[in-house]
Amino acid sequence: MSTHRLHVVRVVVGATAAAVIAVVVQVVVVIVVVVVVVVVVVVVVVVVVEVFVVVVEVVISGLKPKCCNLPA
Image (tube, rainbow, N blue to C red; front, side, top):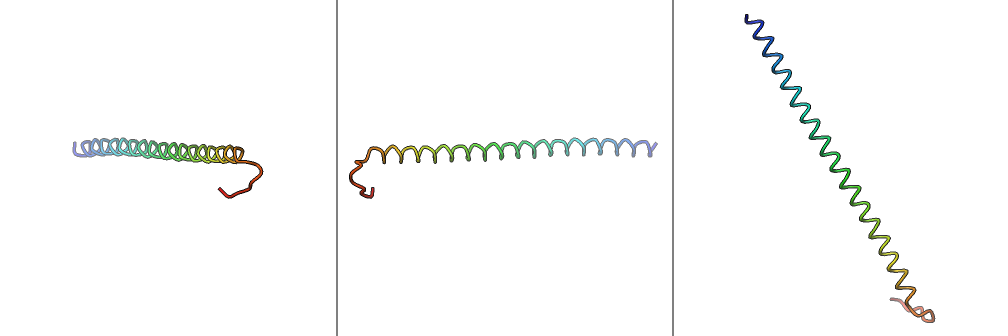
């Protein structure tokens, strides 16, 4: 009887450990996905801002008088 109980305890502990490991793996995967998404969004925003700055500089330089190359 005691060996049967011990086996049941082992099965329950093993199943609990497997469930805990599965939850931890899911949490880690979610964290990694969130970090990757945040990095991608930041890179896209930086690229868009850089392109916007270049476009604005080109437009401003196009509006300046052509005769005088004065520093801004």
